[in-house]
Each structure stands twice: as C-alpha cells, then as structure tokens.
Length: 293
Figure 1 (cartoon, rainbow, N blue to C red):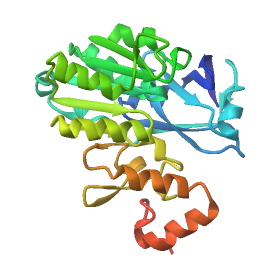
Figure 2 (figure 1 turned 90 degrees about the vertical axis):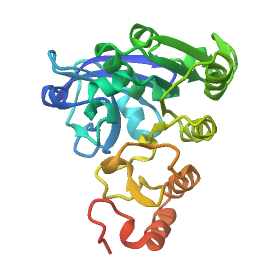
Figure 3 (figure 1 turned 180 degrees about the horizontal axis):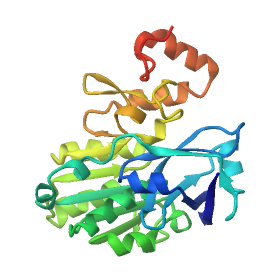
C-alpha cells in the first residue's frame, strides 16, 4: 500500500496528492509519469509526475475528475493509500539527458494550459535548481481554475498568467502571450515546451512553427494503459508511428499530427471505435508487441 500523506483540492475537480513511494521518488525525473491503481478492481490511471522529494520519499500527483475512477480518487484522504503506484514510466525530458552547459546556453519558454501546469512545474523547478532562469506562461479558463501559482512563481524567472475570461491578470489565450513576448517585446527563445489540452498544444505549435521556434509537447492526454499495449496513445510523429507512453510522452510538436491524434482520442472512447482502429491499423495498433491479432 502506498500511503497518501496529503490530499488537497486545488480547484473545481482538480486535486493534488503527496504519495509515499520512496523507490519511485529516488528514480523519477521531469517528464516521466506513474500509473496508480486504487484497489484490485480499480482502473489503471497514468498521471504525469508533478513533483518529487527524494529525501522524504514522496511523489506529488495532480489529477482532474474526468470519469468514475478519478471521481473515486478524489474522495481519498490523507492516511488512505493506493494499492499500486508504478513508475517512473516513459522517457524523461530531453534536457535532463543533455550536456548541462548546452542547456544553460539556450533560452527556454514554458507554456502550461490548465492541468498541464502540473507536469510543467517539475521541469521549471529542475531548471531553477540548475541555475537556469526560464519564462513561463500559464493559461486557465478563469481565476478559479488556476493551479500551482505560488509554486510556479518560486521557480520561474518570469511568470505570465492569462485567463480566457480576463478574470485574472491578462485576458486571452496563451498563444497571444507568446506572440506578444516574441514580436512586441523582442524576446528570443531557443526552445518552447508546451503542455496542456490537445487543442492548446496544436495552436501553440501552429504559431511557434511560424515563429521558427522549436517546440516540445507532452502527449500524456492520449495515454490510457501506459504500457503501449492498448493502442490508445498511437500517434504519427513525422513519418513514424509512435506511442506516447513508451516512446514519449514528449515529442517534437511540429511533427505531431494533432488532428489525427484528437480524432483517434474520440474514436477510442467507444468499443466500436476501438474495433475500427484495430482493424484499420493492424499490427501497428499496439506499441507493446506490434504483432497482436
């Protein structure tokens, strides 16, 4: 049993938990994810890692209620626990594996939308810990749905917040802030990292491609099983078939076929849709073995 040490409601339908998982905390890196399972009958739920403390042996997860399983998760309190807490899974962010001096020589812009603020936070924190100041844009529908603001302010070089309805700080989409920083304020960035709803990442990449700004996105929204066997997170990156859970979740955003990914995401929600995808995609439907019939 993996004990929940802290359970907090961040916003409507959005919750944070600190979980006692020493082995995961010891090994995890920004960009990776875990799979949680409440009990024997519980659904496997992949969640990106929001934070970790190696000394205390804790991992922080943030999730949003989107169905029955996450609704049940939201009812868990400090002192309760998960039967399974598996990880770290996936590939860490590229900069973690690169030469530190090369990373320090680049200027990074991080863009977070909604619950995407959670996986952006450990990346920005890593940058801060390694002496790298980065600019961060956080977007939310309104002030009430804004999460982790104080935590992000502590690690960001500059933090720009925008809300769709103008209820807090700027009014508008994250793309408008990117355009303002680059075209009006004259900021130069070498890399953009965008994490949030699929539609947000699609339009961020459309803009950054026009700005000639290399962009990394996290395709965690399409993950279901988390091991490559279910076929849910199959996507096209350039001319290659990839699976977010085993090959990612981070990819070159300018190569991701977002329209295809969003269409598959909708189809996968029904049994008929899953059957159709399996029939059309054949051996490439699964990432775990590639040879299922």
